[in-house]
Image (cartoon, rainbow, N blue to C red):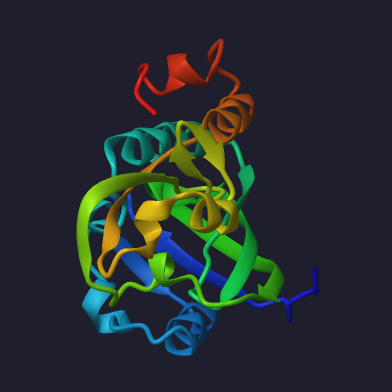
Length: 194
């Protein structure tokens, strides 16, 4: 894997979970990735408008709870583009008055053959696939890397890409639980639903 230019971006959410601040790094990342949103589009909007899937919302609400109690939380995640595997580290820090600072640092970027499943503009149809919001593994019975899912799943050869729903694989749920200092396993954290 190649090391990425260490791009950092920061945004801040208020005690009401509305986005209050986005920095130049956030704007730069958005522009580099054909972002359709501009800072004025997201400022003042609820963070929950951009977090999808009940498991993912539950995870971020749990993270907000421990951060607002005074803890700093760090975790790795992927945010791939169709032609680029990207690995990041997120740090969530408590600020005064219940605000939370989200700080993201790019760890690695690796070019790869285009993965149409990751193209936000690709036409979608049935079926629906669950993708882990943290590591981008796809559930095909077991959880597999997205690159392997494209090879293994014949449905990905269709004219329409499947719908994607965001969830959390057991490995990422266990890691998150260790960050939160809770639980006895992924199914416990995820309420039994992947």
